[in-house]
Structure formats: C-alpha cells, structure tokens
Image 1: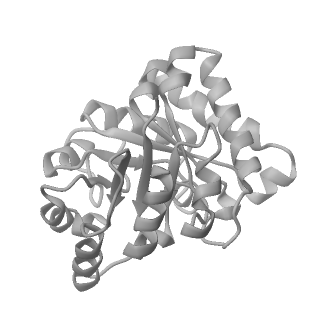
Image 2: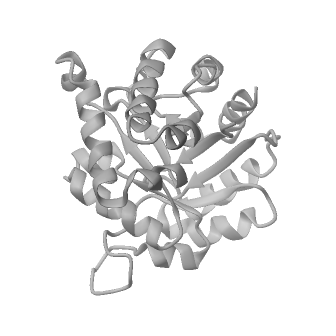
Length: 251
C-alpha cells in the first residue's frame, strides 16, 4: 500500500520573518498520520526550517542539487551531500521551471537524480509537458522520454526509492488544473511504463500530481487510483490551505 504524500515547494518565496510565521503555523496543523508531508524552502532558510520542525513529522528537502554529488568548485551550486549533511531528506530534481527557464536537459536531470541518491536523499523527479506539447498530442512521449533518461543512468529499481511528480507545465501557477481524469490518465501511463520493466517497482512508486492543487480540488484529484498525493506550489505558502490539502490526502 502506497502512503499518501503532500510536498510543499516554496520556490523563490520567503523572508526570515515570513518563513518563521509560515513554519510556525504549519507545525500547528492537524496532519493525518497516514500522510507523509515535506516542505522545500529556498536554500537560505533550510537550516531555520529544520530547526523549527525538529520533533515534528515534517520532512525538509532542497529545491535542487548539483549534478556533482561531492563538494567542489561550482560557485552558486549546492551538492546533494551538503543537503544531506544539513539534515534534508529529499530534493526536487527536474522541476519544469528549471527545465524551461534554466535550460536543464533530461540528461542533466538524470545526473542530478543520481547525485541525490548517492547522498542518500530521496529524489522527487518532476516530469511533465508544456501546453504546446499537450495540444500536439505529445504528452505521453514527453513524459516517457524524461523517465527513460533517469532509468538509463540509475536503473529502474532506483525509482522504487524515489518519488515521481507529474506536473503539467501549463497548469503551474496559471490557475488551470488538469481534470482528475486527465491527471489520472498520465499517472496511469507512467505506472504502466514502469511496469513494462518491473511490475514491483510500478506498484510501490509514489506518483504525485502538481499543477495548481488547492484545498477545493485536492480530494477529487487524490481520489484517483494512481495519484498518491500532491506537489503543491502557491498553496503551500498558506498554512491553513496546505493543512487542508494534507487532510484531503489523508481521506
């Protein structure tokens, strides 16, 4: 049985004051014991958030890591081993904003996935298509290609120890959301792709949906058989909204 998960990606948001307020409110939320919850703050605030959630069930992750796992001469980058040393448990790899805006290729994302695993972090692998790709009927091919590059480098078994987040690019920060049926269709296709290589991996790998998830639509999305929770963007910056999404996942 796959445990539900809700992960909050704070992106490039927050000040010291707002982060203290947000994390203070989050630890007061009633979170179902059946749901794993993680937050991904900007790297500047990781230490502060880790200190604030100590003793709670909240996990903390990094928003990205370098393709090189060890420390070295890479100005501005953060090694996965440094994130692990700081106390992080997870790291996002391949978020659409990094693929599209910062030009991260499928190969680079796969290298970051491997670096995360080297450090003992759980990679949260983000995959998804643009609006143009969906309109051209290329959704499944795009997602399959993104997954295949990771499998080529790390092997299919690695995905059993990771998390996949399907995020249709056209639904991120736009207010648009894939319908539950649209989201389920892609989640099911991802699980089938995994099953073609290893049925056991397909059964245990958690696949989250990301794309304008809110408390109002969370329960319907999470009710789909292949959707195991959500990767939440803007709504994760509101403790009450995020808590309500977590409770929807628990139901």
